[in-house]
Length: 123
Image (cartoon, rainbow, N blue to C red; front, side):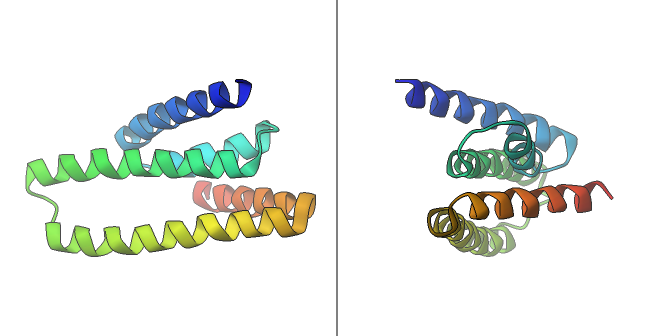
């Protein structure tokens, strides 16, 4: 029951961060994932899955708004969306592979990589 509550909480937190991230002009998942991995003991697979929900929310809201304004080209958007689906699937499967085969070392490597990414984005 606790895991279900945690998953529901992370999903709704991801939606809120996605909304805020899209309004601020940054991807909510870019903020959410490194922060959750740095400051919580939640399993990295849950955090990454919720980060993907954040990215989906950000992309959906931003894409709809740009489409309404006539700024977005739907053909180019569809092309990049298909690339994003492939990339996020590969990333998610790679993360699961790393954590399952390398154990705590894999979790630490993922936390380190996402922390470095966040520092790079801030700079």
